[in-house]
Image: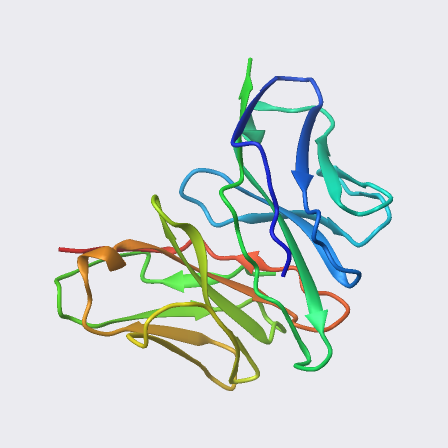
Length: 115
Length: 114
């Protein structure tokens, strides 16, 4: 599975949009981009995932570049409760083994939302 | 519906002992994955079980093993505990199907080895 690169940390003011970048330049055609977040000492929480089209749900938007080598997670109106480590992961389904690849979590981006 | 549950939530063991952790997935989920999280190494994949078969495995020594039962509940066992096994152990469940594999994580079991 492809590796991802994220900035180690970023700050965001409450009420503003938070844009979290992720590079995945070696992503292959069948690999999805997933975003999870982990609030201190809790289990990671699924946010959103996509293949090549932009996606939006009640939590966030995911923008994937046309060449799929990078993506951006957008939290439209950050709140203090959005302070967490955000992980970008790429993973694909392997037909030969009929299984999904492993979730490989990197170091993630520590997002701190300030009042 | 109920989320992923893990028992126990906290555990203290001494070096050389063994430990068994339990994970109950969300109803209908057939895939259970286990992860180890430490401050130094971050979140690392241990293994995944689907329909009672190990489908994927991470790079951990043979002291770490697991199994899955017919009701999809899973257990993870660590034998001959070492101080470095102190960690938060997380399990995640998913449908495991080709169309959709969003993983839902449990709260974790905090293992301390003394």
